[in-house]
Amino acid sequence: MNHKLEIRNLTKMFSTEEGEMAALEDISIEVTPAEFLCIIGPSGCGKTTLLRMVAGLDHPSSGKIILDGKEVKRPSPDRGMVFQEFSLFPWRTVLKNVEFGLEIKGVGDKARREIAEKYIELVGLQGFENHYPYELSGGMKQRVAIARALATEPAILLMDEPFGSVDAQTRNILQEELLRIWKRTEKTILFVTHSVDEAVYLADRVAVMSSRPGCLVKCLDIDIPRPRKRTSVEVNEFREKLLMLLSLERSKACISV
Amino acid sequence: MKLPTKEKWLWLVPLIAVLLLWEFTAGYVIKNPLMLPRFSAVIFSIYALRNVLIADTLISLLHFGIGLALAFAAAIPLAIGMGWSRNIFKAIDPIIEILRPIPPLAWIPIAMIWFHLTHYAAGFIIFIGAFFPILIDSYTGFRDVPKVLVETGKVLGCISDKKQIKYIAFPYALPSIATGTRVGMGVGWMCVVAAEMFGVSDSGLGYRLFQKFYFLHQMDYVVAYMLVLGLVALCLDRLFRHFVEDKLFKWKKGIVK
Image 1 (tube, each protein chain N blue to C red):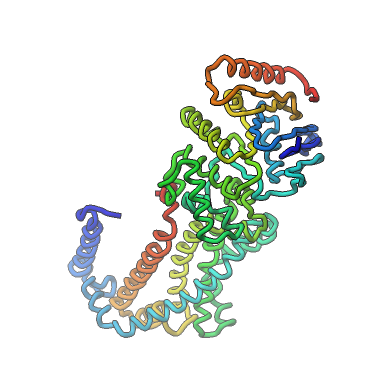
Image 2 (image 1 turned 45 degrees about the vertical axis):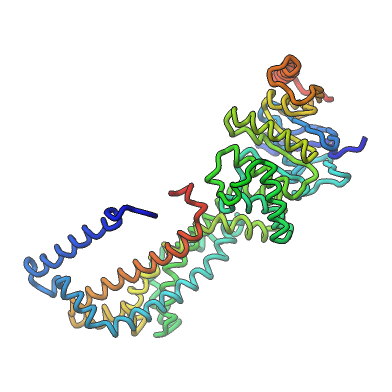
């Protein structure tokens, strides 16, 4: 099977006062096209660092990241990213935010407006095109960030706890919306979270990480048909499995996969 | 902004009260036009001096314009460098911090030797006065660009420093640049008067006020020119706010107001 994204023996060292420390150790994952992969782990396990390296914002100490057969060296619009913090450009309206990547690419006025409108509609924000970010709620801001990341038609969507700073109700709604968008666009999604509930509700597969050094403990296929019910027995079984794995991680050293 | 008529004219009441108090105190308490000319006498002086006053104002504005334009042109590129690159900041900051505390008026001898009695001599003093506020506010703006906005830009295709500055740092820093410019304008205008007063010029509001009117102890004329100095600065500031701040920074509303 051909892989969309391949992470091979990725290691990331950080230098501290006590010398070199491994933040990530020998991580290998393959992601298939249109797969929804959640990466879960305790805080400090380097899951965000992993995602940032896929984005090209951080550089691995060794190992390779290969997207569509090409090695990732630096950031590029072929990898859309949604950050945990609100990252809209406050001086740009919703429309101008979504157009940003296209503007940098040099897409003409009319064409980029059309594309932007399409994605604004996809995230359900039509009518808000000319609003500034300060006029939007937290959930709406993240919708715009998703539309903006999708507008350049990236090969993969990277999401770093994108719903971490919105309230629980909005979070549920955004998760459903994200699944709808994922189905419509057939994007490959790499989604970092610390929430077991979120991972089980969203993912095709969950990669569990341990902390210090961060390494991959287990990959779990979530083979529950969608739409999933948050309170169903199967969902709860997976939640329990994941919680077990995570609590094991806290008391045990790293095992290679 | 819409205010009820009552609030709109609120500022007039204390203003009229102060002017009446002035008129009364000068006319019936002090009774010495050398100590304090009456308000009515000052207004009459403004009328009597109208021709020379307009010419002097234009000369002073020319000095101001030269100094401010040069200050802006020199401060902005330097601010971009200092705000964007830690190394440039480290290299240049000590020089800036040695020069900055030198009062603009201390540069008058140098200005006279370098530029003789030209408009550039006065312009130079204004340049010194306006340069530092513009520089410091502006580089602060460039330095404080949130990391997440820069990284968002990178992921969306702003790879080169040039693009990051143009599309992210510059728009982000614009309000700081505007604040610095406004402060710089204030300091610059004070320098106009001082520069002209102390002989860097043989015309302009400050020159006339000090070298002509004060020399002859024509205090009603002196105070008339003082009033004009205040009014011109008020107009400059209002114009700046109207054309720059209110128009350009709609997006800031939610943050500062």
